[in-house]
Amino acid sequence: MSSRLLGSASPLARYLCRSQQVVCPSWRAASTQTQQKVNVPETVVSTLPSGMKVATESIGSPTCTVGLWIDVGSRYETANNNGVAHFLEHMFFKGTQKRSRNQLELEVENMGAHLNAYTSRETTVFYAKCLSKDVEKAIEILSDIVQNSKLDEQEIERERDVILREMEEVETNLQEVIFDHLHATAFQGTPLGRTILGPTANIKSMRRKDLTNFIQMHYSPGRIVLAGAGGIDHQQMKDLGEKYFTHLGRTDEPLLERDVSLKEPCRFTGGDVRIRDDLMPLCHVALAVETCGWKNADNIPLMIGNMAIGNWDRSMMGGKDLVSGLAVRFANQPAAHSFMSFNTNYSDTGLWGAYFIGEGPRMMEITDYVVREWIALCTKITDQEVERAKNILKANLRLQLDGTTPICEDIGRQMLAYGRRVPLEEFEYRIDNVNAAKVREVCTKYIYDRCPALAAIGPAVAVPDYASLRSEFYWLRL
Image (cartoon, one colour):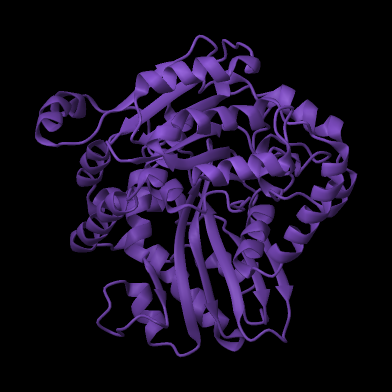
C-alpha cells in the first residue's frame, strides 16, 4: 500500500483544505443566488449516533470512491512509538478475523476494485475505488480491516522487513528526504519534526501491544469521516455506516475539538541542516518560513503568493518572456535546474517556501534569487501579477477535482479540517476579494524579517550561511 510521506504532498491538500472556516456575511447573502446559477452536486453530511461523520457527493457515475479519513497521523505519536501509524496502515491489509491476507486480495480483485491507503503527519486514509453496485462490499471490507485486523505476530515480523526496505527506498528519493529534514529543523523537538516512517530502532522494536494501544487511543468514531463520491446514495452510505462500524464504539467528542493530551503543540524553531556531499552532481535545497494553520484567513493571500512565485524546470520553454519573476531568473541562469513553490499546512501551523535545485558553485546566487522574489511579494507585487496568480489558483482548484477519487479526498480532508465541505464558489469568492495590497500585507506578516528553515543536500558549500541568509529577509532603506 502506498504512503504519502510529505505532510501535504497532495496538491489538494495545498490548495483546497487550508482556508478559514468562518464565512463572511456577504458570502452567505450571495450564496443562495450562486446556488441558483451553478449546477454543482451537493455535498450531503450526516452524523451517525456513534459520532462518525458521513459525507457524500453523488455525480451519477457508474463508479465511485469510498473511504475512511481518520484524524490521526505521525503527529499523534511519541518519540517511543514514532512510526506506529504507518506500521498500522500496513498491518490492516494483512488479514482479519474474517479474511486471510490472500482472501482479502482475491476478493478485491474479483470486484475489479482498487484498495489503497496512505499516512501523513495528521491523517490516515483507507479508500476503495469500485463499481457503484459494489459500494456495500467495499465499505464492508474497509470496516473489516479497520475493526477486525488480526495483527498476527508473524505478519508483524514480515511487515517489519517490508517497512525497513521501504525506508531504504525512501532514502533514495531526495525530495522526500529533504522535506523530512526541513520539518526536522523547522519543528525541532516536536512531533511535526519527526518522520512519518519513524526511526529504524522503533520499527525493529515495534510490538503488537504498541499497535493495539494506538488503535484504542485514536481510532474513535468522532475522529473518522466516511466519505464517498460518484455513483452513490447518501442514505445508503448512512445505513452502511451504521451497519458496519458498530465496533468502533460511541463517542461524544466533536470532530474539530482535538484532545490536547493526544497531540502536542508544535513550535517553529527555524534553523538549517546541511548534508554536504561534493560527489553529487546537483545541490537540492528546501527553504521555508512558518505560516498558519488550515482555518486561518491568511491562507488565501498566501496561496495567491505561492501561485505568483510559480514553478519552473529546464523542460519548460521560455526565458525572459516568462511571467514569473523567479522563473525568468532561473531560465537565464545555466546553473539553475528547477524550483517548486509549496504551501504545506497543518491544523495550527504551516510551511510556505520553495524547493530548488542547482549546481553547487552557484547556489549562493540561486538562493538569493528565491529570497529576492519573496521580498518582492512583500513590497512591490502588482495588481496585474495578483490577477494572474488568482486565475491560476482558481483553475487549479477546478482541474484537480477531476474524478471520483480526488473529489472523495477533498470531501474527507475538508470534513476533518472544518466539519464541512467548502464550496468551490466560496473559495473563488474569497480569492476574488484579495488584491495586491492584501497579498503584500500578509506576505510581510509571514516572510519579511522572519527566521527561515533551510535543508540542503549535495555540494552545499556555496549555500549561504544562516546569518547571511537571515539578513536577506529584510531591506535596509534610507
